[in-house]
Image (cartoon, rainbow, N blue to C red; front, side, top):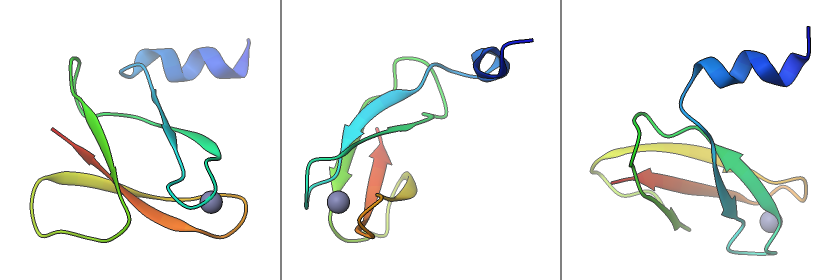
Length: 64
Ligand SMILES: [Zn+2]
């Protein structure tokens, strides 16, 4: 009945930091042992997700 436990069914999240202000966020990699890389701009390869921090900065997190 603890809300966060529902996420435990998925792969553990990884912590990332906004490249603009350093604010921490968490993302869910597609698989275990996946490394995450933060980028300020989009690139046409790989799996990625976008993150918007509380200050409105958008950045891309790549999984590799
Ligand atoms: Zn930011």
